[in-house]
Figure (cartoon, rainbow over the protein chains, first blue to last red):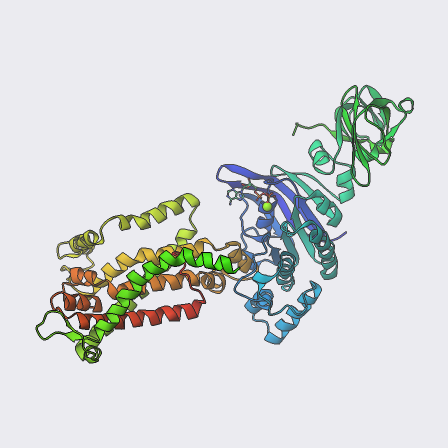
Length: 348
Length: 285
Ligand SMILES: Nc1ncnc2c1ncn2[C@@H]1O[C@H](COP(=O)(O)OP(=O)(O)OP(=O)(O)O)[C@@H](O)[C@H]1O
Ligand SMILES: [Mg+2]
């Protein structure tokens, strides 16, 4: 098991009379790429700023290597931040921006220039030492910001929506590079985003937040395949969320039919919610399926069709490569492992 | 392209004519005037080229007036920096609502005639005025200070009148500042002080420089403050020019004095441009 590096214990944060963090508890491990994911205003940035030391929690603890640090000022923490809008110093050139932290530590000039050069090489900006940072492109500024943070060899790098300002193509490329850099330097990244695809493709662990509370912590696969509640299921990817109840272990009933499933541990007859991912559903002839309906709409999405099927009870969203014309009667097919059963919770 | 240019020329024509009539012509007239002399009758101007006026400025009496004015301008500016910089800086850190109130508060005096405001200072600074009263009550002094009609009184008046310019131009520079830069500096290991002096201060320099220009140049000419609060004891270039034009009736000499003042201030403006590489003054441009 890896070492625990940071522990957040029951953090709360109030601004004025508004509680924006309502008890965040989270372990962050060495060498981990951890992502805080959630909709705008859910408290991701606030959590990150508490780790960085720019905010003090109203209550709760922040432990670093087991030592309480919530009152330690930012400059004494072995943590560096990549800010959303980069926050490069406009009056300093690329090299001086990167060297800022090292200059403060009175590192020898020759060592500094060596380290700066190495960093620039790592982020793919060799030879940019004397450039004016204000004249760099967004992607380049981002790289400088990452180099400026990493050159200080922090134990943890905090990144607050670092790719938010970049266009889709550079974004994709930077995602890959960030992941590569993280593996190369072998430190912990705590990454904030509200883009679920980004979170799933880069992270070792994803923390889904909403309304100042953690909804689920898990690997991307867990989060996607086994959402713990309706919020996670609807926030991550598209899904059909259906109310039903557990007959007993491995048997669930919804839409008036009983289905075998792989979930257990619920009480008999407990009210639950069932997630069916659109891509897990197949269309077949009506006689081969329990649930049947009529095609109401079909849209070509590139790789697949998105088909809206109206059944007796509801509208289902299905992603499939098979074509079916509007008005056709059709059956919905899915296996036990495609059914994800969740505890029922307050509506979102 | 050419047609556009020509259209542009027509558009700026009224402005050009305006500038020629109201700026260039009087200036040129002043230059000529400064090389003429007072007619022997004591009234009017004798149009004969002479360097006499400029030679006269080198006379210790007048030279010292220039030194005195410069000294006052420098001390006024220095005090303005010390008071106005923090004022403008902290103003920029206020919440949006308080910012508005602070700007309004700074602009308020502009709506009142500055002479009236200066007479207010006379009341405050006089022997039995509020300032002395408070100092006496606090037992900081045991007999009233003679502040009015002294150098410090002039300085107080100058700083009072010019402080808003400094504070507002620093404010407008600091207001545009990205405060996450200070956080970035602290994140990289800087204490608050170091972050201020390496990041914040250099980035507010344009505002500070324009504040300096906006306070230094007027302070060379605000003679009425010296007249009212200094009781005519300290003569500044501004009052000298005014006196030469009115009581002395020596317009050519007044013109020469004005020309020297103009050259000194232009040199300082040139220095500013060189230091900041900018043509536009922060806060007014
Ligand atoms: N300094 C502050 N003063 C008052 N309220 C604040 C402050 N900082 C954040 N908030 C509030 O706290 C809540 C959480 O903000 P936070 O910035 O952590 O959200 P976020 O998850 O990062 O959102 P986004 O994705 O939009 O960046 C918001 O409602 C915000 O308005
Ligand atoms: Mg945020």
